[in-house]
Length: 343
View 1: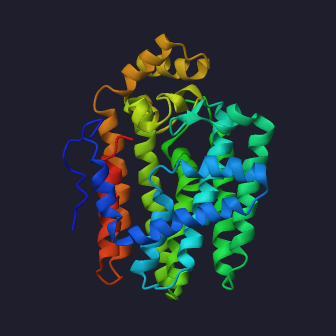
View 2 (view 1 turned 30 degrees about the vertical axis):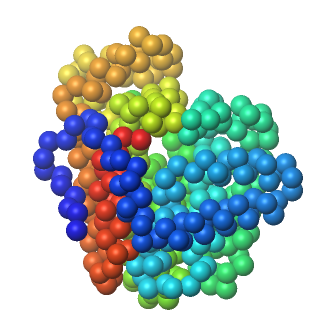
């Protein structure tokens, strides 16, 4: 069973596990993931022709399918042996895709997973409608489940995700953003859907409320750790591997944990200079290079990765009350994989 180490010095960039590593982690649910892809295809095909073409394009470029994998693994670990988890994992992925469409539009991003973003392909108005359609369609389909805790969980998560984006926008370009502010943002924007997806696994398996809550808490902390690594990679990741430009968050004025740490550690004169650069809203290559020099100095990225590891380590005890299984082992392995990722 892999451990999550947090005491050893950590580099800003860890070695990327090979593609086979994530595939070996997913090995116990390979059949379910194949069914997931078929389910996503089926849902796309059931839409009107233009929406079918657009959503097929958006959903086929899958990335790691991390969120649906968590739904499936949590369901199986909790003892579920039916098939409804496949549809629900697809709905979680659709909600995530909807959030990416809106995020890219807000950020005026050009690339997502190495391809042109939807607002460049179809224009901003259509992108807004596509994102809205995917949100609403996912929530509509969740209402078909008899247990209304499922639709309630997904609806609440979607609302919290949007609240997180709005809070992030409100605090953009503000060097006074605190770590507490940052945690509020990422717990809503990212952690909420991770938490909902994991808790759904317990609901499907008929677990008691305390076990469902433990799965939710696992997912929330896993999501926070994931987002911290994602924010770190905005400064040091490889654009080709990430499928989007680096320094994208910086260009949009997001004050993430590496910047917050750099501001806290800086001497007064350096802090004033860094704050003025963040507030300038004109991130020329020279300004980007200067901010990057601040952030990549003095172990700042090591601290970010260490805090991500602490959040991930906090998540793991919530799995302890579930019986040992290949699914539980995969969840623990996935936690270690996320901390080491470079894309």
